[in-house]
Length: 340
Image 1 (cartoon, rainbow, N blue to C red):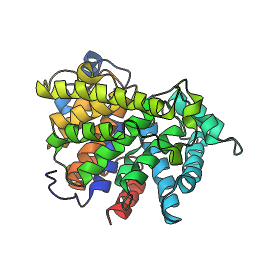
Image 2 (cartoon, rainbow, N blue to C red; image 1 turned 180 degrees about the vertical axis):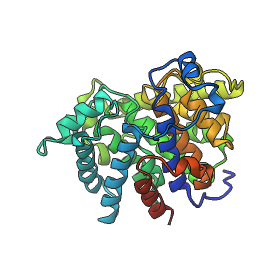
Image 3 (spheres, rainbow, N blue to C red; image 1 turned 45 degrees about the vertical axis):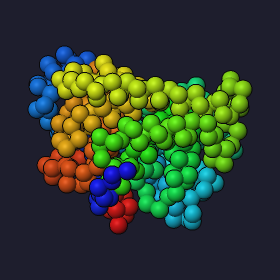
């Protein structure tokens, strides 16, 4: 596949990058591009806020990372080992006084339901929601070492399903984790859309019952296969839009005009990828482009940062930015453990 070699500090780079994107996009979320330019000046000169606070995107990424680490410390990763620790971390995030960064309604509702221990997780899952809250946080699944492709796919979908049970949320989370893993393993950015398309086609009719149980029965779909295919088809559709945008790139236009505003899972993935792929070797410009968008700017930039950091490693981020990001010590500790 033409891989150039694994990035030795991919986990640290991706985790710091997603937090930096999150912090850069925090003040611009809910603003259109003219309002962002009026507030921040030229987009190519945007500076990291001081203090560099993050949103629920980074908080939930860390929650997933802690839960995943706990599960993997207990043995070979299975759905039974993963569900409990991740569920506990999501509920702890929901209860935290620091959960005051405009969190998504789906995450709040699902975590409230998950906080009742005897409730099966599938009855908490919001099966009608494909908001980006599930794939904005999934990078740890792509970064953790030693997982098989089947474990990585199943874990990415299960962590989504705990809150966002829509098949497109499941597929987009799986694709996002796979993109992070491909970049960490040395995939060339230009090859990434084609590799993701092939992965989506290969998994299109695969319902991971060992990880998802009977979740599909809570939907209106007549079969598990048709349930999951619906999600992959929406992801394939947005990859078409990504390909069209990259065929005639306009680096000065709002990326949301090409691949969507990012409030929903497949569009957050595609627009985060677009911003990264427009500037694959210029990570700060990629983050700035992602933060200066008319849609869900913090989540788009969060994903852009994860992709850029997985590709380029920790050296992608200058110390004057990385040194003052919120949750820096925990991000570095998790990254260092996985990079080792």
